[in-house]
Image (cartoon, rainbow over all chains, first blue to last red; front, side, top):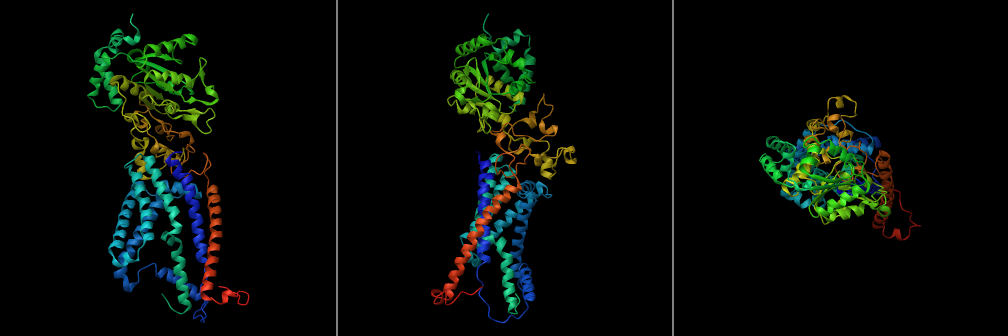
Length: 219
Length: 376
């Protein structure tokens, strides 16, 4: 078995199994945790505090008007590289074919050259994000191994993907194998690090918002 | 009368009335086909004129003769030019007039007379199962013949994917326990000219380069001449601009296919296949499979037969045996893993709740019956 067959065969299979197992484990573990009982009388009806949860989800996905000068650039950076990642992962034809082979559905993609440009821009934004994390004293203090390693595994997928597209440094099949191995690594790390925010971020905002709305507060 | 192999190539050309001028033209064309620098043309001509025609022994083992059929269709040089003027083909059981004992005697004689100097060309994989009984010629197994012939060879040229990498006989489940030549012979220089079949001009070009220079050409890690196997089909494909534009044929008869768009989605293995099809083409430079509307099947790569469906795009996952990729298998794998994850998640949440309860009610938790835990 060559490296390419391993990376997209056994390697991918193991990584996918760990990903599914880990994600469901973390979601169940999180969802079934006991929420401390609030003995106060609710200020709002269930409907209203459910709406409060939804409102918070949306409100926190956009910079607050009062702080836009301070938080706007950071949020713009975050949105930009996330959108870049989505475009590269979901709109590049080989990726669509790969995902199609897993889920049975395909969709139209963007031209390969455009995806390459988006990937290079996303890579630049990734470096900017790291620079910001390292140079900002507060962010640096808040960061731990999890933050840096999650950044590294995501970045690795982008770099190896670009190298495979550009045929730089090794034969294409080796570069493709390394790229898929980096995806395998990302899938394995995903449930156990901060990349799980993909699943947690919206529910946690909604729950926070709903609990605050129950008390009559908005966030 | 001197033996054929005693004559130089120049002698043979003079005997056949070939002019020096037309010979230099032939060498220039060959150098161009091999992507060598232009000054190599006259140098090759000068070298060949004085060179003794090397003895070539061509052995066919577990193969379909497709490679030899390909070689017969070489345009530059033509097969007759090669075997009458450039090399002394002393044994080839497909082409030679002799048969039976006479043919085997010719083989033994050629090996004895040119010991240490002959070029051994192998076509086909070497079966080792059942004591080598799956392929025998003249009562001798292929593996024994190969070992014996390799002893006196100056170089071994493996023509075709079967001799280079095992090919189709080597594919799973490999019932004859076939092996490539390189797995059996380890002490001789080997040149792999892979392909199913190889491009005829690549076979003759490789032989010519060795005959001319007396040295092995630059080889890649698969022991293939870089002059012919240095680029992927995808790199040199005339449909590459459509790949870059994201224009792909979705079926063999849709509008994209009619417009000549990229065949990547139809399983083309061009991006991972190193060969000269896209540049040298076939039938004297007429066309190549992609030009005829079919994707590359990657036939010059090791184990190409075991790498999943020929029509599955390169970017698809390999879940199991060829053709066994399906969303259903993804669902099986994902749901099994998720079910285990669910059980582990429930258990870990249960442990978490118990710990939380204990920390909130340190005394009550010692009397769980008298103080049942609250629902949360």
